[in-house]
Amino acid sequence: MSDEEVFAEEEIAGGEGQELGGKTGFIPAVVLRLLKWVALGLGAVIFIVTIVVVTVSFLNKGPQNVVYPSDSEEYSEVPDILQWYDLKEIRVRTADKSPITVVIHPKLGYEMENTAVQTDLIARNEIIVDRIRSFFAAKLGSELTADKEKQIKNELKQAINKIVLKQSVKEIVFLDYNVIEF
Image (cartoon, rainbow, N blue to C red; front, side, top):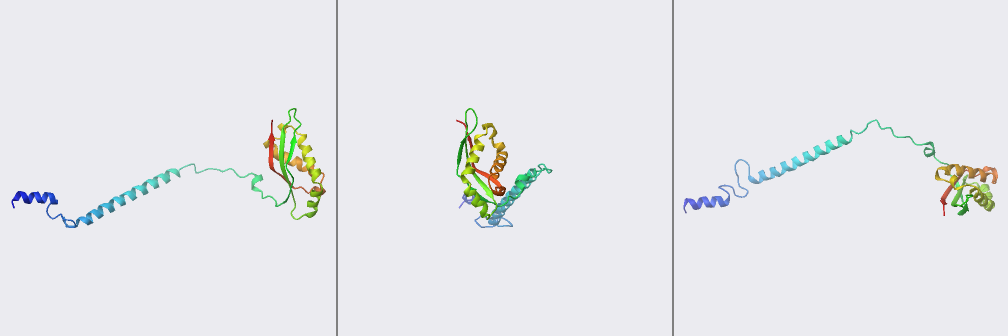
């Protein structure tokens, strides 16, 4: 073999002594490749952690003296547990020139386990429904807006308590409260 053939074989094989798993010097080639991938992985982890720390610290620099509004008394109070008397759905026309239809489904709340009140409400069911119907029939559509619902419930509770024993209705809720213009 000539010298030219030996040099050609060395170039094709990748040089002398660079066999797979062979030593290129002080450290084997496989260990160098492994160290290269470990270094890349470690660099990626350090980069990601740095980005996360910078982002979190940037986002936490928002206003530190934020004052949150306090709850209103209406929502902070725990309501009493009541027993409920269900009335049927009531449809009424208002006193407007062009009458508006009001559809309500009221429930009357009274003290728990008070059978005398329950008996009274059952006995006066038709009178209560008529009082509710006449209450809404005397109102105008402009008086029945959602922002006046609490006032309407208080007025209605007073009207019903005038016809039941010992003003036993503690609260009124509307399962449905619709004011419909045609």
